[in-house]
Each structure stands twice: as C-alpha cells, then as structure tokens.
Length: 172
Image (cartoon, rainbow, N blue to C red; front, top):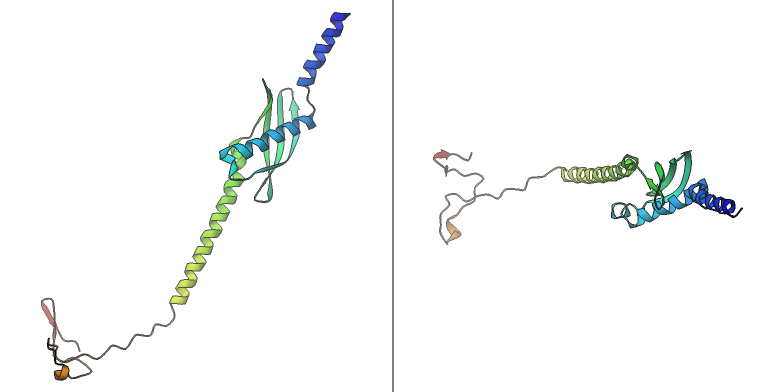
C-alpha cells in the first residue's frame, strides 16, 4: 500500500510539472518575454511591451501562442513558439515577426525626408523671387596707375579695347 501511495505521489509531482495550465504558462512566458525585451540590447532601444499572450494551440509538447506587443503606442501581434526544456518552458519568436519595427522605422525616416524636402523646396521658392541686378558703376576711361584722380573722366561706356588673353575685344 505504501508503494502505491508513493507511486501516486510521484506521478502527481511529475504530472504537475508537465501539465501546466494554459493561463499559468501564458503568464510565465509573458514574464520571460518582457524580461528579455527589457534586458537584451537588441530589443532595449525599441521599448517593446508585452500586453498579452494567448495559447492558441497545444499538441503535446508543441505549443503555439499569440502575443500582443506594444511598440510606439500601437499594438502588434506576433506568433510565439513555446516548448518544454530541461528548466521548464522556453519561447521563440521568428525574426520575421518583427518586420513591423522596420516598417515603423521606415515610415519615420520617410516622414523626416519629406519634411526636409518641403523645407528645401520652401527655401528654393523663397530664393527664386525676382532678382534685381545691381547697378554697375560707371568705369574710368583709360585706366592708369596714377595717384592723381583728376585725370579720370566718367563715361557711359569704355571706348578703348580691353585685352583678354590673346584676343582684343571691344566692350561695346
């Protein structure tokens, strides 16, 4: 009789660790996930929050869950694979489930580029107002290097050719 009671007691202990309720398993995995997101440097900068985890399929040791994560104040759903290991239960999320992070980051980058383009366009529009040429000062006739300016007379145009390279050109 003592052997039967001992055997039943051992089966109960083994069964309790093997048959964890879905709610308890959800809470454990939820806590593990949040701890991982808070401590792993690959996830820390995103400030992911686990809002809920539901067990959606349980076939022996194959357990599938659906987690609701909060990122940038919006909810996102990811699929979670849960499996039993030596220390209890572990979880895994396929990296393709995190594409929503890339999409949000790309949208923020696109918005930033659009804003910079609008600012640049506004600067160009503002700078393209009618440009009024400055009045060109009248020139002296027969420029010479003298300190006495009394020789110089003002005219509307130069009548002497100015040398430009090997070519002589009139400035008319």
